[in-house]
Every structure is written in C-alpha cells, then in structure tokens.
Length: 468
Image (cartoon, rainbow, N blue to C red):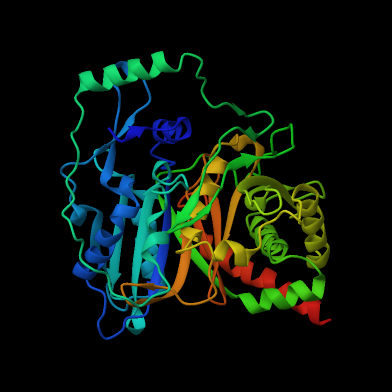
C-alpha cells in the first residue's frame, strides 16, 4: 500500500458532490512549431514525468466498514491513453468554441475507479495553435514532493523533447479487503490519541497544514492555514450565492502585466490590490446589470489565499494563508474602491511577510498550477458561509516555458466552484501577461461573457483615473 489519505484528502474525496466536483483545472495554449504536438508526443511527455508525481498512477480504495480513511494503491491496470485523450474543435476553431468545450469537460466528475485526473489535447484552434486542458482532483495535489499538479512538472524552461521512460512501470500488489481492514486496525492501535483535523467553521481557522513544493533539490514549504478574523457569516448576495447546477460555463480575460505595473506606481499599491479592485469593479457592474439591490453597506467577501513567509532569518518557511477581503461593490469611484481594498488587504496581510511574485515563480517548474490547487484546498477548508466568492492568484515565470518543445503562449486557471457560489475566479501571470479564468455555474451565471467585459471596463476606469 502507498499510504492512507490524509484527513483533508479524505474529506475532499468523501464530501464531493455532483454539483461541486473537487478537481482543479488548467487550460494551456501552445504555439505549434513544425514538429507539432500529437497524441503520441504528449503521451511520451507525460510518461516521462509520471515518476515525479506517483499519485497520478494510483487510485483510491475505501476500507470496508469505514474502519479507516481510504488508501492510495497502485492502479495495476493503469492505462495512460484513458487519461490522456484527444479532442478537436469544429471549424473555425474559435475561442468561444474552445471555452464551451472546456466547460463541458470540466462539468464531468472524475472516474473514482481510476487515478483521479484527465488531460485533453485539443486540436483545431485558429492560427495553428493547440490547447491542453488538464483536471486533477484536489486529493492528488498537497504540495509535497510527489503531490504536485502535473502541469508544474510538464512545463519546463527547456525546449528539450521528452526521453522515453527507461523502465516499464509495474504496479505493486493491490490489497484485498481483509488486508485493508487489518491495516486500518493496526493504524488505530498504533495511534490511540490521534484526532481528526478540526475546522473551526465559526471562526474560519483552518488547522490543515500542507508541506512542501519540491522541484529537483529545491523545496518550498507551503501550509494552508486560514487567518480569517470574521466571526459572522457573510451576507449572501442574491446573484452570487444560490444553489448551483452540474453544468458550467467558462470564460477568460487576458491583460497586460506592464499596465498593472504602471498603475502600481501611479497609485502606490500592490498588483494584487489592483487585481482585486478590477474584480470588485467588474462584480459591481455585473450586479447592477442583474438588478441586484446595492446599498452603501453591500459588501462581497472574497476569500483569497496569499503566500507569506513566516520563517526566521536564513530559514524561509512559506505558507499559503487564506484571507478575507471585503470588495466594496457599492463604491462607484474606482480610486476610492482601490484605496479601500488596499487598506483592507494591508490590515490582514503583513506586507513584509508576503512572498514576492518573483520568488514564487523561481521555485521550479510551473508552480502556479500547484499553487491554485493549494489555494483551493485552503479555501475549501473554510466554512463557505464566511465568504461569497473565491479568488485565487498564483504568479508564474516571466520567461517562456515549454511542453515537449512547444512554447506555452497562454495559461488560464480553471478553479472549482464552491457550494452555493456561482463563480470562482483564478488569476495567473506569465511572460508579461495576466490571465483570468472564470469558472461559472451555467444556470447561475449564464452571462459570464458579460462579466469578462465588465472586468475590462473596470481596468480601463483605473487607467483613465491614473492619467487624470
């Protein structure tokens, strides 16, 4: 046996519902060189890296009678062609067609009888481009060595084509039910004082810890811990907080990072403050378009995981902490809105401890894929009653990365939805651009494309104010 699921992994696995599958996704767009990227090449690239993410060849087995948490076991019938698939867009291969396909693929739950991930090579995009859409269950990605999101290890600074695996992988013995029961009993007897991790939902403090992002010899410790200070539940926002369906819509926004750097200098704030302000402005316009009653007291509580360094001198200890930030959607002045967000963020996050984007981006591979997963894990360990919307922001490298010799052009996160929340927003910066992915409930936010336009307008408002 490869080990028992942690308490948090077991909770993600057990509490998953058809309307809220707990998998994290990413949509990567590539420039197609002469060599191209076909199914066989993608298979080879994935096979080369599977040794570094062994859980991607393991499945979950439940213990009979519920005597213990489920265990990871090797899938002796592992078939990589089941997990790495090919799809194609009809002509003309537009962005809207791509996003519709991603929404459909993302709506489907993962097969629990197999390793909990899927990858799709999507052909037929305009301008000779191609896409890779990946979804991985949150239980696969805990940030420890071997528990990274697969896109982190697939994307590298090198154009080198993957080498074929030297040895054929052979799965270990699959335990019988009796062995699972005996193992669970031994585990209980050896740890009589063991207690489950507790989430204090009323306060929003998460006892969950997540150790380690590791690439080669580099190790980055990341622990998910909430320091949400609110003791009261967030007030539901009629258009944002409703029961959701099984179907999704997906839309994206692409922005220039240099524009945010200019605004940062103009307003004396952080890029993250600006991003939250753009989200707040977009939400304000969207709520108004829905006829949502907005008063001066209307607030949207956003939960945002932020990387901070809590180590001592010479011994960095990086943790991912989930913070509540009030988005002042009632405020019509974009500059005042920005100031309020910057003040709220500064009051919760020690700016001296916040990990710089360049530090995260240098931690090996393509860490945003894993960081989004860890951020979502942190958020899902907090009572959803405390926040209205989840916003994950994971900075990436500002130089090109490649998959099997193919340059990554764009990378959009596809974060999962939280119960009774119609949209989750993921943000990734890479190679001079900021990529925003909006994963929305098909019924609750049928107008998600309008929301993308409102985000562009909110940014333009700040640009105009900076020039005046």
